[in-house]
Image (cartoon, rainbow, N blue to C red; front, side):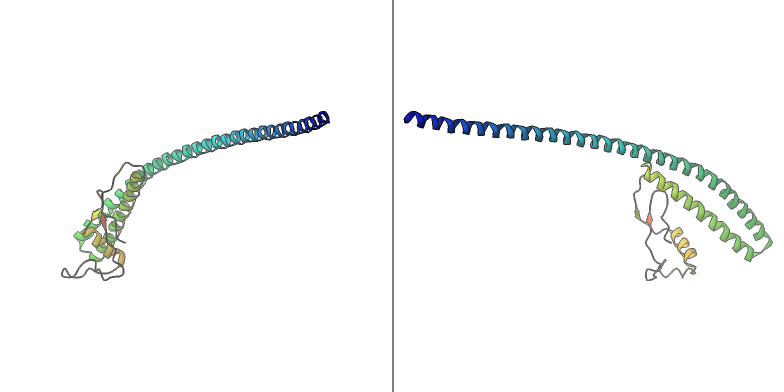
Length: 192
């Protein structure tokens, strides 16, 4: 009887070992599958990173090329706009002098507006080029408060108001059009 008992126990033990080996084989298969999937996911992530790096490099190169093209365009346009503009301003100043000699004050005032507009346009072109230099890192700004008389003149001509007496503050701080100016090394930023 004890032999039968022993055989039954051995049979149970064989069944337990067989079930354990089957479970171990299943776990081994699952771990293998998991490792395979993790390696595949890592490879896919590496490929995505490689593609993203390539896309970023292409975008950076395109942006740098665009920036170079913009700088070249601004340099050419600066020359193309400034040269004839200086000629127009110079010729207008000659006409103004001739009109002053003839005593035609109304025409002198009108031609003065044209000259001022030419200078204003020249200033705008200079500002665009200066901002381009700032963007390219070739010009540094050190802003400081300014009370430039030119700002007052510009504010007056833009607002269409006549200049008040010297006793009052200019531009008037109570005015809704008043905006403080900031001076930079190259010029006062216009208020209007």
